[in-house]
Length: 146
Image 1 (cartoon, rainbow, N blue to C red):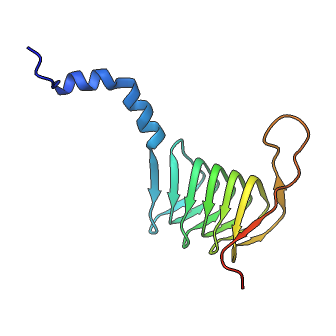
Image 2 (image 1 turned 90 degrees about the vertical axis):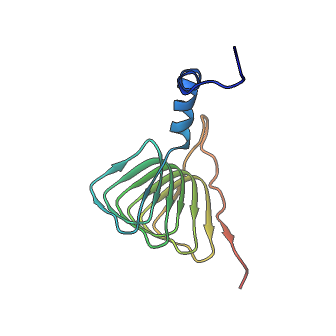
Image 3 (image 1 turned 30 degrees about the horizontal axis):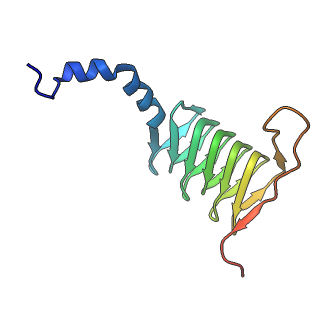
């Protein structure tokens, strides 16, 4: 007799690969403020970094806390930087928050620099598709006018 509910094994087997795919898409890792990593960091999940990284960082999506420090290259599809980065940055979609300090060259497809955000390096627009290189995107300053 079917009473409208399934046991755990039935639910697990019927959701199998869908649940695993959703888990990968929704995964993220948080590195707290007390974490110091010496060496390169590569992740298939999204990262939120509040600590200190002495090495290169590569991931799909990166959120950097305001007190965080990265000493190395940053590569991400989507990056929201609020701390300090000493090294080059390459991101398709880049947001440089008002507290961010980047010392190094920056490559991007789209960029937004909030009022107060600092970049000490060269900016280079990445060509997102085939064909001739697109003109560089204007940098927008977000925030109140002085």
